[in-house]
Amino acid sequence: MHSTKDLLLRISAIFILLSAVLHLFVPAVAPWIMTFAVALFSVLTVTNPYPGKSIRGKRLFNFQLFSCLLMVAATYLMFRQRNEWALAMLVAAVFMLYASIVIPKELDKEKSRDL
Image (cartoon, rainbow, N blue to C red; front, side, top):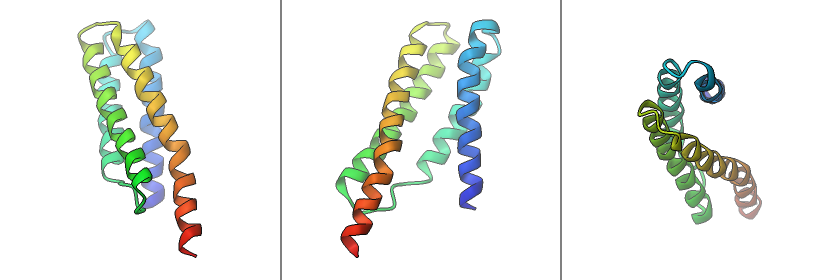
């Protein structure tokens, strides 16, 4: 089951990137693809909380949740044909990238402390 969630997460992330690029060529279709992809990505993120007990890890998970909210805002801005959607998506990507790099390190640190 874990691999299915991981696969869906990767597919939704690819569709988010695809819709951002597609917005340059077919701006009428891109927001709909972005809506589906962001909704799937956000649901998978929310249903997969931080498994450890570290305060730092929980804060990093909150970064991921904030990133999902920013992606929802970016999707709304894309529908409204506002160019600020790209800025909101960029900020969301930075938060998500940071959290996705640091969370595994924090989990490893917790596991080494428990041993």
